[in-house]
View 1 (cartoon, rainbow, N blue to C red):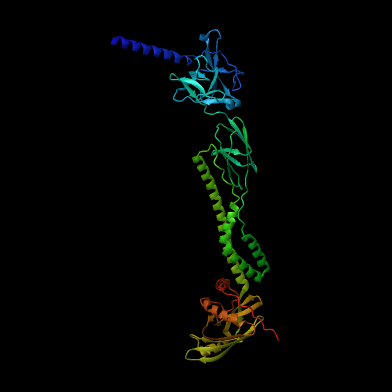
View 2: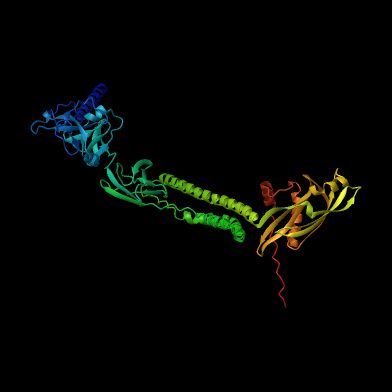
Length: 504
């Protein structure tokens, strides 16, 4: 009947469930009743009188290391039991033990599971010694293991196959080393690596270009990584030798040499923009190349590494550009100094005192209160004559005649250093009655057997630019006047030297 069929199905389901439960129960450990002590092995070292301390399976601590030992009775399967012992993992244990994770299970369950070297096994054919650290399961070797999880034999693959080592060295030594972005100290050093994926090393040292390399892992062994760093080369600063020459010429007061050097520096200033770019390109050619994409490196990882390399290279390029910009500034500064130096050397501004005895009064125009003045004067530098018309202002003829001995002047002149030697040039004359400057309303002409007419004419042109400058009666040399004069003389060009015709 239908009722009997239903009862039979239910009974069958219960039987299968009970059988499965009994079967699954055989793949776990119900209790730990092992021996009082366990013997240490190559993977776990004893910390307590050379013996492994028996541990409480309900009080496993993270960071400690435990061995679970299976004790079998060859004549009685029911007598098989397990013990847990606390010790310390050895370096060999870190290198040789396979590490496994059991996901989504409390560690108390993980501790009681039996682990197998193959899938088709009986419940009592589990691995004799298994290790624990509060997070993972460890067994000897790096092959997959199996555990009955929720009634099904499940393969567990090792989280870490084996620990490998890298012997790191650099030339020169002492480079800072990072691995996958984590600092690892300075070379030479030895690094323990717990992965099979090729790591990325970066070497950095002051004065050298950083170097990024992808290293090959020798599973369970040691790989040597030795990197030779390229020394940083800055672009050459052309100003350094030019400044040495400038200092030497200045000390020697070599005016001709200073003028020639000024032309050289000016030419270098004009060409430096293109020259500096070539110099930067030449230096950057020494920058180390980025390694090709590694065989186990993803596209994203390679892009990230390339971006880091490019960032470092861009920073170095910017540093070289800053040096080039500094050269530009140095050239400008040196050219400015050369301008001031060569101007000061080329144009020696002087003030020649003209005493009253060198001045004679000529025709007097009463209606305009103007006097003609004639000057004839000689000193060790030059002899000259000068004629001008002065506006007397409030002074009258008797006063000027009476105070003739107080009439005096200052001749402003310079000596120009030309290729043919020093050439004097008139600059202008200021006349004073006592200490009051008189106004010239009409200027005659200079005459001199010493002054070059072309340079004197140039001096007259500059005199109009000096109208805002004032001079005291017996001024010998004024620093402010010199500074203003030099700034005006920068645009002055040296006249062509006079070449005498050959005598036929």
